[in-house]
Image (tube, rainbow, N blue to C red):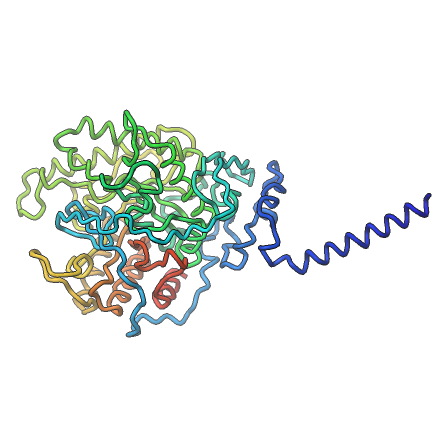
Amino acid sequence: MKMKKILSLLISAVMAMSVLTSCGKDSNDSSNLDSSNISNSIDSSNNSILDSSIIDISDIGDSIDSDSNSNSNSKNSSKDIDSSESVDSKESTDSTDSNNNSSNSSNTSSGANTKSNTNTSTNANANSNSKNTNNNTNSNTGTNNNSNTSNNNSGSNSNSNTGNSNNNNTNTNTNNKGMRNMTTAQIVDEMGIGINLGNTFESCGSWINNSSVTNYEIGWGSPKITQTLIKGYANAGFGVLRIPVAWSNMMGNNYTINKDYMARVKQVCDWAIDSGMYVIVNVHWDSGWWEEFPTNKTECMKKYTRIWEQVSAAFKDYGDYVMFESLNEEGGWDSVWNRYSGSTNGKATSYGLLNEINQKFVDIVRGSGGNNSKRHLLIAGYVTDISLTCDKLFVMPKDSQKRCAVSVHYYTPSTFCILEKDESWGKARYDWGTQSDINELKKYMNLMKTNFVDKGIPVIIGEYGCPIKNKDPESVRLFLTSVCREAYSRGMCPVLWDTTNTFYNRNTYKMIDSQLEKAFKNIAK
C-alpha cells in the first residue's frame, strides 16, 4: 500500500509539472484566461496591488504605470518619452473635424469642438455615434464592492458600475488612497499635463432621449467610454483627466441627481484613477441655468448647493486623486456687467456673485464629511478669463485647509482658437506663430504667475485649444505645444480641450498626431 501511495504521488507530481509547464507557455495569451476566474481568485482581505492575479491580462502589453501606488510622480512612469521633439515639422495631421457642434451660449465651452462667441445651437452631432467602440462583451454590469485594503486607501469604493468594464469590474483603485500630506501646489505639479473628456458627460439638449445615461454620453458624437479608452490617455502621457459634467441630465425632483448618471461618472473616474491619472470633476454649462443667477439667485443657489452636496457625498471616500472644480466658464453675467461696454457699471456686483458662489462651493465640500474636509479644490476664475481673473475684484474663497487652486482658460487669439470661418465680430485666422503671438502668450502666462503662482496659489489652465478645421496643421501643433510649454514651465498645469477624434482618437485609443504626442511628453518629462 505504501508503494502504491508513493507511485500515485509521483504520478500526480509529474502530471502537475506538465500542467504548469503548459500554462507557462501560454501565460502571455489573454485568450487562454477566464477573466471571471481571475477576479474570483482575489483574496478580498489581502487585495494587494502587487498581486499579478488582479491585473487585466489584456492590458499587459500597454504602457502601464508600474509605480502608481507611489507618491513620487507616478504619473510620469508610463510616458515612454522620446527626446526627439519635433514641433516645426510641416507634416499635416490626419485628424478630421468630426464634431461640428457649436456652443449654445455666449463665450462657453458647453460641449462644442469649436468654441463660439455667438448663440448658435446647431446640435450637428445628434445621434452621430454610428460606431460604438465598447468591446467589453464579457463585462460585469453589476455593483463593484471591492474591499480595497491597500495601504492608506481610505475609500470604500462600493461604486455601482452601470457600464461595461474591460477588466470585469475588478476595480483596484490603486491610486485612490487617502488624503496625503501634500500641498495643492504639489498635487498640481504631480498632475503634469492633462486633457479634457470633452463632449461626453456634459452633452445636453432637449432633443436627447433622456431614457438612459448612454444617450447623453454619445449625444454629441462620442463613442461610449471604455476603460481601454481612458487608459489610452494615460499611455499618451496625460497625468490628469478633466471630466466636464451636466448634472441636470435626468435630474429628479428637488434637484436629485440620477443615480445611474452618478454611477457612470464615478466608474469613469475609477478607470482614470486606476490608470494613474488624477481626475477633475466639475459642473459644466449644463444647459445654461447659470444665466438665471442674477434674477433668480435663491433658486439657482439651491440647485447649485444640491448638486455639490450630492457630488461631495458620492466622492467623500475618494482620495486626493479626485479634485472638484466649482464651475466652468459661466462665472460672469453680461446682464449685470457687460465687459465689452467699457463701463464699470455692475462690475463689482457681477464679481461679487461669482465670489459668493465659489465660497459656497468651498463651504459645501468642507462640511460634507469624509476626505472632503481636506480635498483639493479648483476655483473658477471670472469667466475663466486671465485678465478678468487677475482683476482685484476677483477674490479666492476662504478655506481653512488652504487647499485651493485657481482655474482659467486660454483661447487667445479667439480668431485662431475659436473661429473656423469669418463671423461678424472677427475674421478667422488660418495660422498662428508670429513673434507677436508668442509675446502675447507669454504676457498672459506671466500675468497668472505673478498674480497667483508667486503668491502660493496654484494654477490649472483648465482648457486651451483650437479647431483643426480650416487651420494650418503646423500652426495647430505650434500653438498647442507653446501654450503647454509656457504654462508648464511656470509651474501651472495645462489641460488640453479635446473632443471626439480631434487630438485623441477614441476608436484607436491613441493620439492622432504622433509629433504632438512626443512634444507633449518632452515638455512634461
